Length: 292
Image (cartoon, rainbow, N blue to C red; front, top):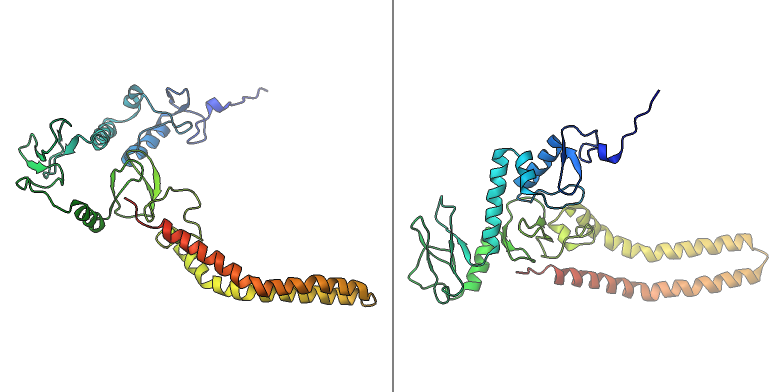
């Protein structure tokens, strides 16, 4: 009887089964073709670049063409085109309805010029991306942009400054251009504990119920905790008295240790808890300011 041992190279790390219809990527990792196809399809529909699920290395265009169906490949190429335009400050999308073209404005010829004409014939202002308005743009452009951002729920990526519109979902955002992860509520960098119970961002994030429950229970915990400590000290003293009922020296030693501890708890506990609580609140309020 012979035993067949499968190595890690024979196992697809997506379906965790033996590889069927193997596809070798340019990073030498292998996967099942249906598995890697579904994986990349999901990433492309979310406007992310296809990558190796093991090492996240970029994929050659030839491999993409051999794995992805034509409709998904065309969608991916369109997303790549959109990213190139969004990253280039000299390229401007035409705001006309049903027009997906862009206009190039060279830096040397763009000084003092805000009018652009698309190949479709639409004329617009490259400063505010509205229909051409006789070269008189808004005087207070910053406040106007802030008002538009607020009404349409648009914010900029803290890293690449790409405009991002939130329609639904949680506050954990991932920029489709630079892949930067940040919090929609405060604009800070995202980390696994960002929406923890002790974060004010949780009010609009993922653990709202836990945070509200903690806000209700926290005053009760702060109020009863000193009494719990004193009750524990009383119980310890009683046990010492019962055990060392004939040893007065041991009882005096235990009493001298417990009594100062009780006074310290009563004297400094409220101030320490108040300081920690106010520091926590101030830290999160300062962090939760909107950042452009």
